[in-house]
Length: 300
Image (tube, rainbow, N blue to C red):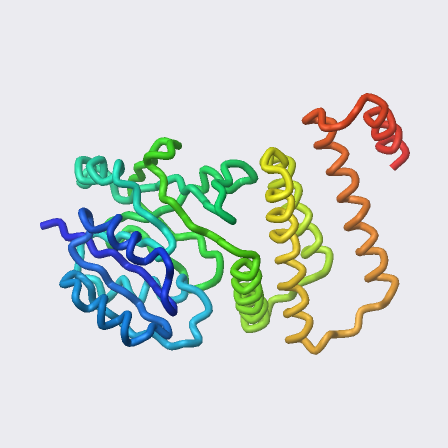
């Protein structure tokens, strides 16, 4: 018999939790709630829902992916629904899932990211495909930062339509973004050091530039104007924050000044070349400026 267990990790008092729980009520038979520093009053209120099973988690867990597999083991369902407390499940997808439950092993959804009150449907934030529903044994979530789930079996991918998308209230304020970025950057740097890996400035620069260029230009983020620029810039800076925490953990090892200077130069020269390429490709520059850029490209 099919039984669906939803798995959610919550911290403090998530503002969209009630909406999230309501959005999965017609699909989930059981809800496993992993609680990190949740107030007793909220836990008491949640315990009134007969579907909910509260699991107390340590306060030092930096991100939900660390505990998803552990919580999955506590679920009694044949199928698992992963959802974050700031996400709403698409109601149009429920009947499709029920109809195709025996035909597919896992389901992939588009995700609609709401940032600072706006849907960001460019800049690689859309369609942002996410595995969220699956047979219990077909998907494994590695316990590390930014994991790629390990999957097996047959996938059903929902159409890239708003009606089938998860709604993700990603960030409401800049403070929320920065708090999460710092928390994740610390965790990522710690993981790199604990695994005995190294992180070089050149690698950081390549990742950072790729993040900005791919989001603001290639992903057409510029169509969202200043908001997309800020988001792309912040995503770029994340990699420098990781590198800074890595250096702190390594006690800021000595690197010859000329090496740092030359590598830094590469950041600006590579950034200029790539920016010029996309300015020309998307016709985001005037005729005279196009001639100047082509001359610069030839010289450099």
